[in-house]
Length: 359
Image (tube, rainbow, N blue to C red; front, side):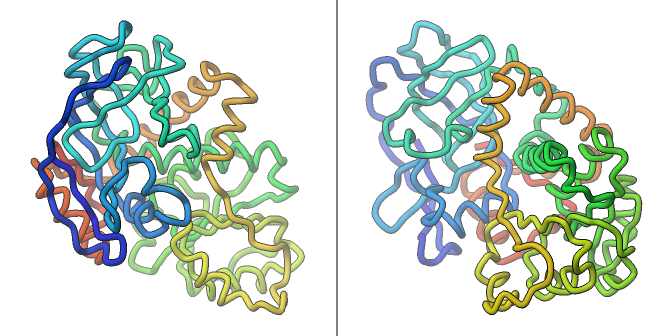
């Protein structure tokens, strides 16, 4: 078995380590990792790993961490009566060749890993889909699911939250970093489920044409054109993490800003520092959106089957809207996974490429 161990204090230091798999525990299932994507989302998991508990899912030696990935795996050994060799699953995986799970709450569509060390974390990350009965699964689009899926789900949950609050009375939503995968996910879901709300995308001048061509937004503006946004009741969803930009939006919209949503956690300090501790920012206090909590609420309200069907319907719509916007590049082996991750930490990977690793 191989794992990639990352130095928590210096994320660009990472090594591939060989380990003995050991005997499979009673009631456990051993998965061989078939494929996973490496995206900026995984870098975020590492950057905020200690604060948000992301290092705790897949234990590593002191000072080291195993970065979580989203991907596909195959059962290669089973001590559980409901799982046979060869079955395929999708879910949260380590940057590694294998993972042992302890399935519980087993249904035709999925299970939860009941491994003791994972129980304190959000249950959303402990759920695995069994592909034979998974409404989101499309064998031809597995690459897109790994690259877009987790980010799309955040976009889906933001739209669900905003719609349940009647968009706070706003008639338009302003999305920063409009070319990001999460923003595109939100725009796609809003286009289909909340068409009455105008979608305004803000992006860098070099990305304006790409964002316009996506067809997901009613209006696309560059960051230096914040002043051109109509002064109407609005909500903002900030994916960019740029405190100065967020401040400009608050000052420009003033009382017309009904809700200010922060997504992602990599720039929270920077955002806070730029917003002024004196509370001099007009409009509502920017509020962090933590997707796992909202996912739990969605599944509680509708039940797993209906909630899963709702997400799947929007996911297939998103694939129609934006599934072809990224060129998928495939690499073999965990050495490649380590190299790509280190490059991403340094910001060196082209965002128009989606990287899939096949260990």
